[in-house]
Amino acid sequence: MENWNEKLLTAARKGDKEDVKTCLENKADIDYQDVSKIVSSAIASGKTWSCIQSTTLNVKHTCNQSTTLNVKHTCYQSTTLNVKHTCNQSTTLNVKHTCNQSTTLNVKHTCYQSTTLNVKHTCNQSTTLNVKHTSNQSTTLNTKHTCNQSTTLNLKHTCYQSTTLNVKHTCNQSTTLNVKHTCNQSTTLNLKHTCNQSTTLNVKHTCNQSTTLNLKLTCNQSTTLNVKHTCNQSTTLNLKHTCNQSTTLNVKHTCNQSTTLNVKHTCSQSTSLNVKHTCYQSTTLNVKHTCNQSTTLNVKHTCNQSTSLNVKHTCNQAQH
Image (cartoon, rainbow, N blue to C red; front, side):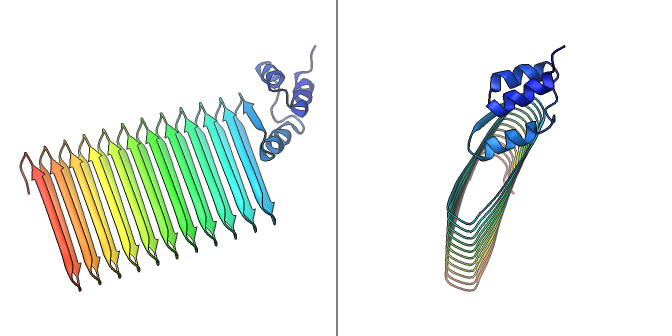
């Protein structure tokens, strides 16, 4: 009788993915001896690894020198993928994950030097994606997420230097997308979201330096979009929202410096659009709203300095 566990161990050590697949198909134990450790080590070193069984993949990396860390993971069963990275030098961290089953993907990154963090995730089943990033130097953070099933995407970013934060999210099922960003230096935050199902999108942004915040949201189903922005320096806030279903759009903006706030909203269904703006410096506030269904449009603006407030609203149905 063949010992599939021993064959699995041998195949893992050789990095022979086809033999590993054969062994697993014959009921070999993925946790036999050091197999799971060998797989994790291979991935941490930048090798590609594919698995057809349920997996808990832990990659823990601590480094005091400049690092390029590549984690590429492809799996056909449920997966928990944990990437914990701490570094004291400049780092390029690439996490590429493709999965055909339910996934919990946790990326925790702490760095004290300049960082490029790329998270690319593609999944055909329900996903919980958590990206937690803390850095004390300039950072480029790119998160690209594509999913065909329900998704909870949590992105928490804290930085004490200039940051470029790019979040691109495309989904064909219901989605809860939470982006929490806190920064003490100049920031460019780009959020592009396209979804064909119901969506709850929460963006909370707090910054103590000049900020460019760009939100582009396109959705074909009902949407709740909450944007809360607090800033103590000059800000350009651009929000472009296009939707073909009922929408609740809440924009709350508080700023202590000059601000340009542009809200452009186009919708073909009933809409509740709430814009609350409080500012203590000069402000240009532009709200452009076009809708073909009943609309509740609330613009509340409080300011202690000179203001240009432009509200353009076109609607072909009842207005409140």
